[in-house]
Length: 256
Image 1 (cartoon, rainbow, N blue to C red):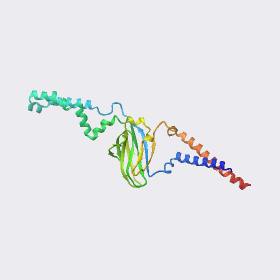
Image 2 (cartoon, helix red, strand yellow):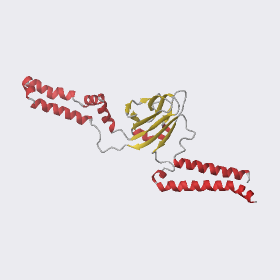
Image 3 (tube, one colour):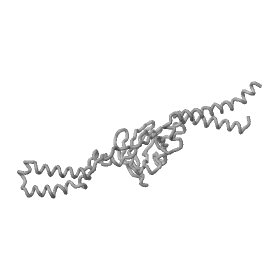
Image 4 (tube, rainbow, N blue to C red):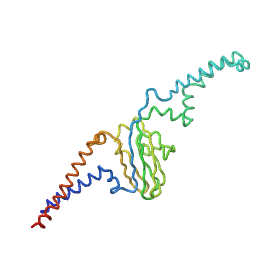
């Protein structure tokens, strides 16, 4: 066998074998760094008019209190009619305006999440793993509004460059964290596969594996299950062809 034939045969064997590893899902651990994130991107659709309208809440609360002042017997007996009228027409509308109500809702964490609900467009969820001890682990995710780590809500920080990030802190060797992030509309204008970065102190760079992103070459293989068998079959045939080509000269010499 000539040298160039051997190189071609070897490249076919290695390429086909690597392709089969990728199709079978066993290639993600090849040459993996100490930090690795396996994430899934999904749409976060909401029903129409889902969320909390601060204007409607303010109008409802002001109207409800005004009705109570008119119908509550104790209030009518203890307050002068002109004072009650001033409270109903002047004080309550100023206390229950949309700015005051929105501020009150923001101060309650559970209600503040409802105000942000209509801004959610995508979710990024998955696992971050560390094979060795790492300090100040952080994951940059553009457009992140809300985040949880192992089921607990954590704050989303902003880096010096304006990128939103999730700080995971110190991670021991073999430790993993389950994360979920909710992203806003602006995240749709960037390539999440490139924008989401994982790193730690001393310049340690991690690897991010992202599923669910659309528009890339070969994305239809995820939906067309039979396409996986077609690609896998072609790779298996190439692998067998390469092995047969490598063994043929040796068999010919033995027969000779």
